[in-house]
Structure formats: C-alpha cells, structure tokens
Image (cartoon, rainbow, N blue to C red):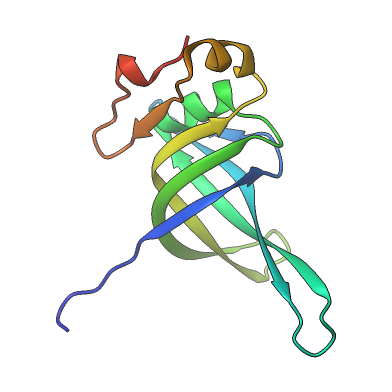
Length: 141
C-alpha cells in the first residue's frame, strides 16, 4: 500500500472546560481532555469492567473560539482529526512528550450551555475547520 492514513473519530465527554492560548498575530488554540468509555465482560470472572481512555484534543483559531463559547466540562462531542505527537523542553530542562488529537471537524452532541435552545430546534452545531465555516443551518441559536 503506497498511501497512509492518520484519522481519528471520537465521541466522548469533555473532562474540563476549553483552555485557550492566544498568540501574537491573532491566532489561538484551545485544549481540552476528552473521555471515551469502554465496557466489557472479563471472561474469567464474568465481571463487568468499565475503562476510561483520556484523549488530549487541540482545536485552532475560529474552531477554538466556537468550542470555548459553547462547550464546558461534561458536554458530549463528536470529533474528527489526526494524531500528532510533539516534544518540548520543560523549565527544569527535561524533555517532555505528548500525543494529541488535532481536531479538524466536530459536532456538539449535548451541551449544558445550549441545552434549552437545542431541545427547541432539535439541531446540533457542526464545524469543519478545513473550510473554516459553520453553516447557519447547523447553528441552533
């Protein structure tokens, strides 16, 4: 196979509010943890096991601002993106590593901030960061 693919699809719950970081020139990023759950039965003990996997998500610019405005801890969201690993030098001189999901598209599934308006319209807001647009039909306010 000559091509490669780096694509992530997740549905999960925010573990914290979106944390914003602004740069010179007007660009920004938002970071937040996303929890996904898995339930299975241990074949040896017949015990039901619940596990949670935490994912570090990064959204950029307009997408970050939309997430910060509408999302809060506990909200459910669908995201698409790609895995990106990076490293940096900490203040103590130790090299740190992390793996993140760079979000390219997302859809709000349930949000505390917009629950009332979503129940009235039955819509959720979606965003495609590739095109940098959000259609008015996707907005529920």
